[in-house]
Image 1 (cartoon, one colour):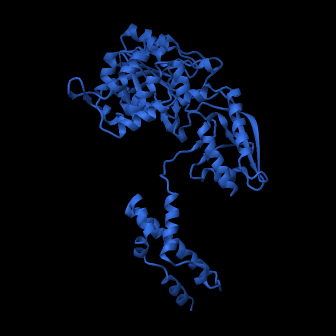
Image 2: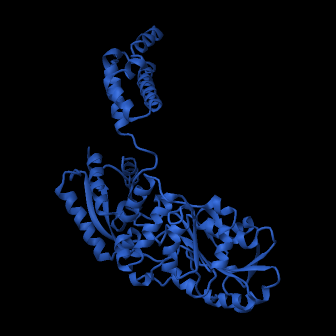
Length: 480
């Protein structure tokens, strides 16, 4: 009897074809790929059938036919609702964590000038590898190199797809297939995010690792005593993601460059995060800038484009012409090269650095780092006033409070230094902080906050003025 009832109800479902021929569905087919529409429709029908089968298994005595709509119009409307809420897997989120260069959230936000340039270049043909003056094939590196040479005062520069690739390709260029040695201080055999370890990258590049000194102390004698006829490179790696204190000493890049010049051996320094601006102007500890490293006589310097620089994911290799030429001619260069959209955004970001004061205002990463506690408190108060004046949140369910807190730069830069910030603490009378965080993350525009001492908070350092509207919408949705 139950099976007869089940089959009778399932037979009442409209055919897929009849739903696809509905006027509303036909409109959707103009906006979305046909196969995608069919897949979503089949999933919708299966979901409705599963509901019925679930009720039958529970021996529900109610008239199921009265509780379900079996018309093609009903399914077409449900499908429309589903597809109108569609978004790609990679989506915009609101960063309420306070971590400025958040690796998991896409690191640096591009400035408006870069976004416009990417849109213009990617939506048309471009002179990516075409020399307009000579009317023949050109080199893609020129588009960023002329600005890098101007900013860094270096002889040459090329750009690859990230800093790991930059380090790997540079090492490979000096050592691959030759059983050549690279000398590095034991205190600089670091690991950064994603299990990127200097010893592993050296081995993969074909370089033979020669460790000198001790973990905490390395001197000139350590380097010079390790140099022999197989030495291809002296490598210095900036410890950007950790600190050592106490009984320690290390050589500066300038010290190592003098050793290299004395023994006619090239010197390379990996800056990791790399910056064009002295961060101490924002009250942060001093970090060597890329310009300072180049001027110290380092032959090859590598650093990221999407961390402290505030640009797209890229690895920049700059320095003396004869060594950069070696790297540029490496066959790996084709595998690691950047595309036109990265070049378009990087060129626009580099152009901002021709005026440092404007760069601090226009490049979001620098702007967020430069914000003072007073600036952030004003921003938090503005958002809280908007929340109170709007109907976004049910005042009987939510409680809001501005609290003083600490945020970090992220991206491996200055990990032991905290920036003064202010956050808005959001409490709900019936929903726990963990569950509240999960709900915020599940929205069409996810809002990512942080939970501290069992409380859900939005750090206002990394929340832009435009993000505030998304937060208001999120609170409105959660309030129902």
